[in-house]
Length: 68
Image (cartoon, rainbow, N blue to C red):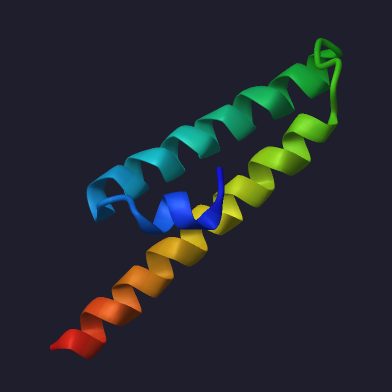
């Protein structure tokens, strides 16, 4: 997903998406350890998506704090 898509999400949706991505990363690492993972680039892509989502979440929190 793109950063703009993460920024458009509501805080609850963003938190749910982050949890979903972390679960996916766990599953990919498990597949890697058991030798079932064919495309190891998926791990890197999910890590980047997690970072994008966390960045969007932090930006939203800072924006909300400034609005007060």
